[in-house]
Length: 198
Image (cartoon, rainbow, N blue to C red; front, side, top):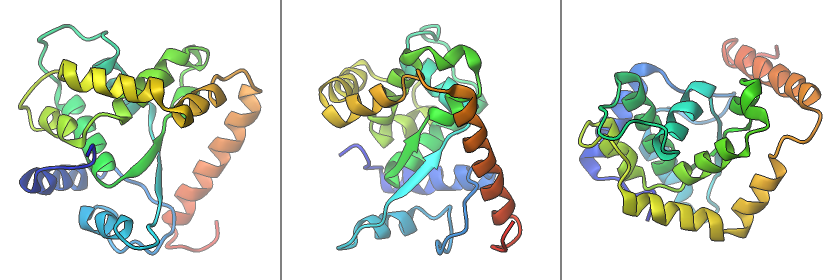
């Protein structure tokens, strides 16, 4: 399964993501947002909980470059890219559903570029272990077999194809951006005021 991680790698990935403080949560009952075991327990319940993440443009851009063929072959990964790979390994292992839409709104040149969303969806279908291996500096590229399998999953999955059509950005971009931006700011304010209304 794509969400599986070696036990020792899960510990290291959790440590990295916790150290860089990569997550900002809205008010919730999650006791520790950096504990992978919390997420794994929640999704194993009879009535599994669902989790979502809105990603920053820096994450989406780096991830897209890993699968979109724009990186120089054999080039080593920067420390920032390895950290982003750790975040992706964390999210996939925790089965957190990711959405790149707000990140794409951050860069006007990406809004009408559907390949950015497509490449991110491929990355999101890669095994968590692939990202862990990148994060832990075992490799500097996504294995071709894993990339091919993820691409096939995206191309043949009706739900994913429907999501891609819904995010083709042929809508009122400024209007939606204002709504999304306002809601993100409110979530941030609430989370930093210990749950009081912002």
